[in-house]
Amino acid sequence: MARRRKRQASSHSSSERWLITYADLITLLMIFFVIMYAMSKVDIAKYETLSKALQVQFNDGPSIIPKGTGIMGDAIPGEAPAGEDQQKDAPPVQTASTDLEQKEQNLQNLLKVVQQYIAEQHLEGQVSASDTSRGIAITLNDLFLFDLGKADLKQGAYPVLEKLASLFPKLNAKVSIEGHTDDLPLAAGSLFQDNWGLSQARSVSVIRYFVNSANLQPGTFISSAYADTKPVSPNDSDTNRQKNRRVEIVVLRGDTNGN
Image (tube, rainbow, N blue to C red; front, side, top):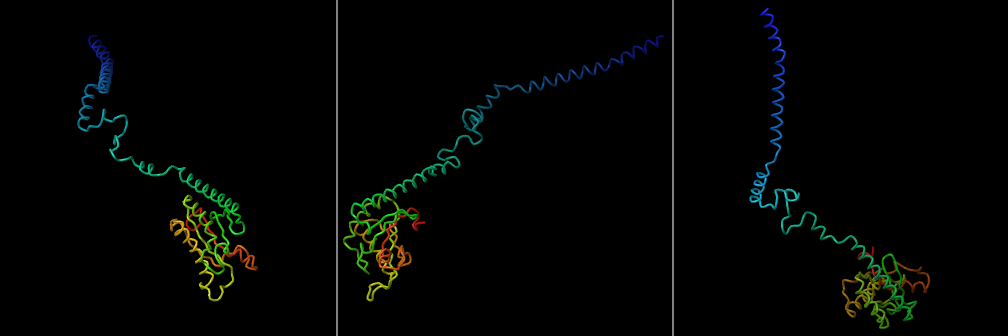
């Protein structure tokens, strides 16, 4: 009877041992979470002490990473951030467009002034002006400028050239002076070997006037000679040949080649 009671007591004790293990586990978990919570709490006093110490060492502003400026902090005095120089040096996008518009307006104003001058001076048939793809072309009849087969300017041409000379400095453009002839060979005893030499000499004579008499810059002008290679009319009559003997003054709207 005593043995049976002892066995029952022992069996009851064994069946409750898991509670001890469970209680120990719960206790350990509680301790674990308490420790984790304690570790997650920031010691403000220690943080401020550390922050001040780092400020003294690195002299890096009011906090360890001031206002999110990043590792580099403020830019080095005197040095612009990458790309800033290019932005400062680069002109505004509209500048180039505005310059082109202004140059084109200047050319159109030139055309109007020259055409008005031609009308006022009754020079139709001797001088003409037109807008071409290359620029403003001012065409002067050879007999208005020169004697037949000669390259010396007539005094009667000076007022027109003087008027043009007063307009060119305002344009900031290259001016091509181009000599043209008809297809007839030069007379015997001519000072020039052929029409190439004559057309070149006439171009140079006009440039000399602009440079020597009107005091314009030599770099403004381009001298070209075309002889009879660019006729405006067929060389089949005296009237048409007269049209082909000319000097063209082209105020260029493009590069120095008129492209």
